Length: 226
Image (tube, rainbow, N blue to C red; front, side, top):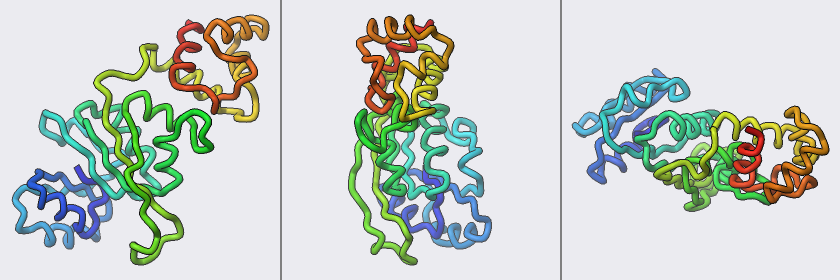
């Protein structure tokens, strides 16, 4: 699966590996040029579609598949999170994205880019930054640098906890980054005194901030709030 196929340069590189490629392009004006570029490749199917509203299961044959794409910067986060959440057959994602976005995907606790997106990725995948891509290799030259990120889907979610409850705690924790996790728990309706006891029992300092907590820390807190 390729999102944002454009004029087909990456599409043809994927074809050269022997892969069957489903190429998605949103811009109708580019479709004729894309179809012409891949006209001699029988293992390519071109679809004009919006990847942020795409039916990942309905358009793809059963079985594991990979997403390999130079993702447009404005859709990178929603597309990656949507594929991880709604397309369990997507076992591998290799994407080029804006550097700041890619760093958010793979950031760990304590990193300045760490946040809810990092945790949502880590819940379902093992991420790594493959390489940095300087602005100079593009034409026209963009205002931002890029990175290539590899996300390998985990066999099972990284933590065992009700997902909705987990994201409720994560979102509360990062809603006010400068405040402590104790404040976030209190905003969720827990008495301040009980919040301290609950966090301590989970092995988390009530004075810690959300960016200092791992996915497993958030999972223990979410479970304790049940």
